[in-house]
Amino acid sequence: MKMTREQRYRFIEQAEEGEIEKLKALISACSWRQSYHIQPVTGLLNDPNGFSYYQGHYHLFYQWFPLGTEHGMKYWYHVRSTDLVNWEQVGIGIRPGDTFDSHGAYSGSAIVKDDKLHLLYTGNTRDEAWIRHPYQCLAVMDESGSVVKAEQPVISSVPSGYTEHFRDPKVWQDGDTYYCVIGAQRTDMTGCAVLYRSSNLTAWEFLGEIQTHLSQFGYMWECPDYFEMNDKGVLLFSPQGIEGDGDLYNNIFQSGYLMGEPLNLQTREFDHDCFHELDRGFDFYAPQSMEAPDGRRILIGWMGLPDVEYPTDASGWAHCLTIPRQLSLKDSKLIQQPVDEMKKLRQQSEGHRYQTTLENRSETVAAFNGTAYELECEISHVDAERFGIEFRTGGEEKTVLQYDRLQQKLVLDRTLSGAPMGGKNGTVRQCMLNGDRIKLQLFVDTSSVEIFVNDGEEVFTSRIFPSPESTGIRFFASGGKAEFKATKWDY
Ligand code: FRU
Image (cartoon, rainbow, N blue to C red):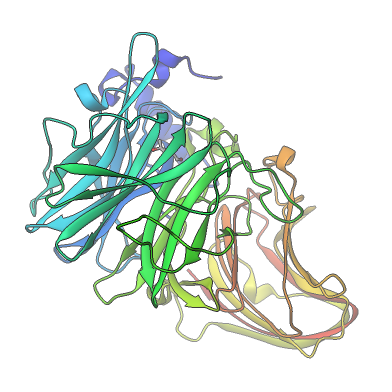
């Protein structure tokens, strides 16, 4: 049953007696809880926020509504890790409810200054007429982990020309100067990103819009992020209001990037190529990146989308974050690879192996059964028309990853993956892929899969909701033969 607005805009303290215990009981009976992904203790998780490194730990926060699976009063929930894969639950990071974040501590980012972690976020407020007034707010975390909010917002109004959809500051440092990008909607209802500058993180000067070539590209850009890599500038953002176009833009909302010459911080000109979608799967949104102490650029996304119902809603929780991905550049394209630290989750160093050539048949591999594992598979010597892997199989259920050599497309099909999901946006996602040799790396968890193709050229990220008994796996080739070489590690 849908919550009323009053129910959605409640703080934890306003939960009814027994309400949280009831949620926890529902959750502990849910067979789709993840085993190695970051997921909410109760309620709804959305965007990753404040991804940073401070005092020996990676810090990560997520948008959190504790009391239900709809979007309501948002907190920042805090987790931390020394290795990006084993995460410790810290607890509430930012509690909303003050004058400038009365209706939620919305998304934002973090940066270290003067040995303190500075969290820059959007304070969401609503007036009596339920009109939104966003503020960009600052909160400072010290070594002890205590978070103190600044009394006043650091950006207290929306510049003229933009609507109240103005949020998600992502901050970075360039020499002695700080910059931040903010996602915005122009008063003509088109989306864009704007740029601010500061010397101290508290006084911010509005510089204007980032001058992209996309003057009409959706009605709102959420969660922008800007960084440079190998002398290129990359602007990530999650535009809303883009129409599907063949294999592209099939999810309700998109997320992707523009790459070009580094952003000119004086003129704000950004000379870039076309918009690239970051992910080919069904469930990926609002990613955020950070620079690790060793210089790697690491990205984590929300494995979910706004305005879509999920099968776990009835069990009192929704969504998780993706595994961390390391970004690199190849031919003006972002390559995404699972961070090397993922190997720490492997329960055996060697793994189970399987090697065979299949011709017009499929083969079940019992040693590869499971619900939480990593699978690496190279497929070569192909003359088959179609070949691939069916995993999480059982009864009628299966999730199919197949290469169609005639169309030169890699196809992920979750039509029979289990509990039905987002059918109105289709149950198949695909992309063009060349080559007679394909490397697939699958990270399967109880209710998700992340597929890295050819060392991160493409990624398919998706939730799936199979029954716990659907643990099987089959390799197949039809219309000819294909050689498979696979290794599987239990997680
Ligand atoms: C993206 C988003 C952000 C906003 C946050 C609120 O999913 O809508 O724009 O800050 O979620 O939870």
